[in-house]
Length: 262
Image (cartoon, rainbow, N blue to C red; front, side, top):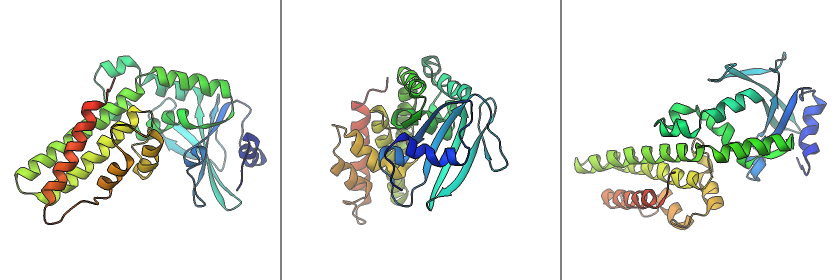
């Protein structure tokens, strides 16, 4: 499917009566919004409303919000799978309230403040394609930038990286080299996620996009070539696993030292 305008994206929804009267905003999210999609990608659209959406064809996703659910509609158009998720405007506001600076200062980490779907949802405010309600979307994005969201998720990723690094060091000391390699890989993933999140490239719950997010962020402290060599274990020597683990942990430490969480 070739789309060039907001109306192109909205047309399949209007044809199926999937845009309610109480629509506050609608925006394309996910890979298609960023031009990362391929022929097999789904098209994901968020519709923000003032009233709960419910039809004979809608599905339900449980959420830790009030009300504790969102509705979805799925359909195929031109052999492409579409998914429309209906959020109440009040639910978006609730999620933004969960990442206030008061929450950050209380020591609550991202996994405790937000569910993975909540985290992904509000992160997408920064990289969406507005279709309806541009001013509403811009206002919520400004709220997101002013919140502690970036600091909360970055701190979470670095904490997980530290935990994995400690595991790797303990496993090296006890001669559990294979486990140390796995812990080292986990530490690298979390450390790189923290680096990218600090630059506003969120999405640690979807590691498949980590290389693309890395290119988008283009961090100065670690080149893509260096990162990708570690991610793909290019220099790993089965005869000397410890050398690779130590190399990875050094990079993780360098990242955490140079990135400001708050």
